[in-house]
Figure 1: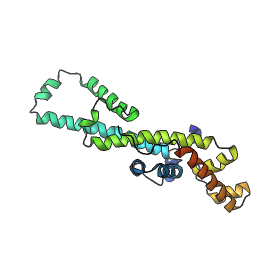
Figure 2 (figure 1 turned 90 degrees about the horizontal axis):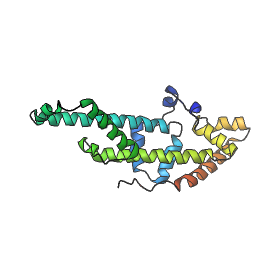
Figure 3 (figure 1 turned 180 degrees about the vertical axis):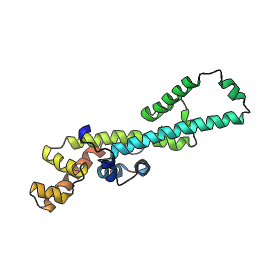
Figure 4 (figure 1 turned 90 degrees about the vertical axis):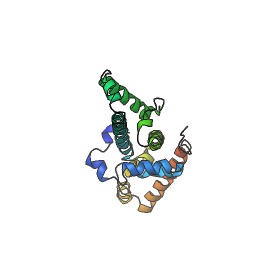
Length: 205
C-alpha cells in the first residue's frame, strides 16, 4: 500500500470499528475465513492496529521483566543488588531490549526472556498471533492489488477510503445493486485467493 494513501492520526482513528486489543484477541481465536473477514472489515487500519498492539506488548513485557527482576532482587535480601553494581546496567538493558525485540519480531524465544514476565503463555501466543497477522495481511493486500484495475479501484475505494457503495454507484453511473453485486463477487474472489495461504491455527511449536 502506498504510504501516501495511508490514513494518519485522527483519520484512521475515526474510522476505527475495533480496538487493537480486541482485534488481536479475536484474530488469535479465529478460523481462516473469520480472519479474512477481520482483515476485510478493518483493512484501512489493520496494520496500524497491529503495530500499535506490538508496541504496547513490547513495553508491557519490558516493564514486567524489569519489575519482576527488581522484586526478586529485593526478596534475595540484597545479595543480588550488591553484586549487580559490578555489572554494566546499560549493556544489560540493551541486551534485554534486543531479546524482547527478537521474540516479538522474529518469534525467537531462545533467550527465555518471557519466563520473567507475568504471563509467558499469553505473551507468546500474542507474539505468534501478531506474526500471523502481518503475514496474512500481506497476502490479502497483495491479492487486492493484483485485481484488475476496475475491480481494484472499486474495492480499494470502499475498503480503504471508507466510501459507501451508494457513492461509488453514483460515481460509476451504475445502479446500487449492480455495485453491490460487483463488490460481493470481488470479495468472494479475494477470499478464495487469500485463505488458501492462511494457516489453519497458530503454530505454537
